Length: 297
Ligand code: NAI
Image 1 (cartoon, rainbow, N blue to C red):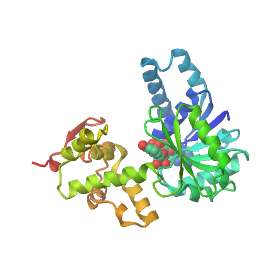
Image 2: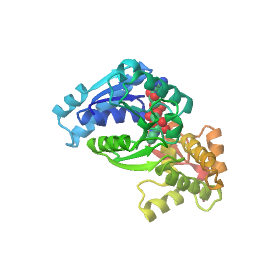
Image 3: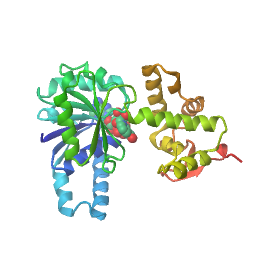
Image 4: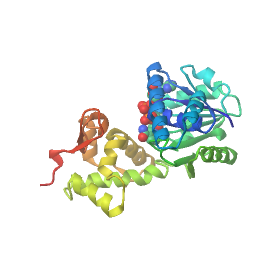
């Protein structure tokens, strides 16, 4: 496997393109927006510079990495010679289905089609194509160049051969893959989101304030970040959407989102990206301020 195409150059797509290009794959990074591609290249350069300053990469590695990377708005051309395509566009089932239909038409028969979705069924996406055995989930973690895990999700029809090729590819880019089955939330979100939801319930029921709840989990459980701060980073709308997928898909009331989460999303309080969540954030910054409305005393 030599040629990779990444569809969608946002938060996740640029990181995925970065790590494959860093490990000597030829990467076509595609987006519908020229502006998004420009921003992606800027981000990749910034992240490479950070790696150079930490001694992870040299200046020579930097130019090699950049020469392995090709930006394009023409998806058809970009995937015609791809061995593996990784889709990382917005979390929207209809958009993803449309893209997989096109990928199935444009790609050669051997191409494996992967999705970086965090909650949409791989089985459902695969069923749109004529090659469901070659469709798989590759769930990278944010920030991609730093986080080592890739959750590899096997759809109902994914073949063992496809899984093995993808596990190998993940290892080749320095990641640690885990192979899991396609059920709502997979493993990572199935465990993470109920924990976040429970933290929101603890706040909702005044068991503790924002700082108390996050401090318990940081100092008591050695989590690098408390669950409420993490929810702000993920985006409260994203947390709500994943919980809804799990609630509907698994049919178990234990996954029902806390009413406080629903209210906050409806109010437009999405976390870091809107500047307000469980914490308030300084403009264009991840620096947090504890919001008075959630103070316990
Ligand atoms: P994003 O919103 O940052 O980027 C999405 C990009 O896709 C945008 O640049 C947009 O212009 C582009 N796009 C939209 N439609 C397109 C099309 N038809 N063709 C080509 N490009 C198109 O989204 P983000 O956060 O990178 O998420 C991407 C995927 O990764 C989603 O499925 C999300 O659930 C998943 N994910 C996100 C994580 C995160 O922390 N942000 C973590 C793990 C998975």
